[in-house]
View: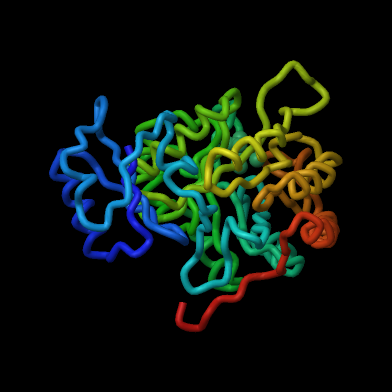
Length: 349
Ligand code: PEP
Ligand code: MN
């Protein structure tokens, strides 16, 4: 159920409606929009008892949301969500493309700083790097953990780049929330509902990667788990799905971009690195992603991919990343977007 407020409704009236909803035993999710505020109602087992909601001051109408995902849907919020980063001009969503780049895993301070200096020079706003790695083999490199988080915090300090890194479980979630700017929930954890709920109780942006065989609805329901706990700063990320095709590690499903944009207001990033698993496919798919309407890309970059401790074959060289930025900068205006290089951090941040 959704309470649509009148355009001229006052903050007090919105507050009173939220209180009335909570008084009925439900949860209220006010979603301010350009024209008016809509208040999503969750926590109901069946049909919401409307009570006197419709007659409260400032209420325009009370409507049923039939989709399984509510807060992630455009029914509740028509305008695109833009996730912003306090004290900077960085954003994910909106007209400006967001570029996230960095190694699959943080392997050492030197490796991380070398790559960070290259991606910042080419104009990225976000630095990615795994501290806690979900590896298929228990014998493969599992990540440097807290040490990697500390290195990335230093990178933020030195270069201004905002940090995106994965939380693997509830333990690492707390650490990632403390040190990073965006909490990544990996493909394998997309349906780890208790982890999603815990991330939803935090007030940091959460990047949810699409599961290896998740449908669009399942993907959005994972975002809904985070939002249902009151954290509306959710970013989606398509990273390829499993198919019969064996020319690539995964099949990057760019067709999900327009499909998602139609039903959801959440921003969507494309990860052509995991999406293809092949260095030579990253650039073509990044171009296509922007052309198809993605809000940005997340790519793996490594200075010595042949020696990388994870995902070397899909990591592009820093020079290739710089070339990619040049091309995306040219493609962006064709589809009504802009790519402004770098991140501006205000002094008081
Ligand atoms: C990653 O981005 O480092 C990662 C492990 O991705 P995914 O969860 O999509 O496999
Ligand atoms: Mn990787």
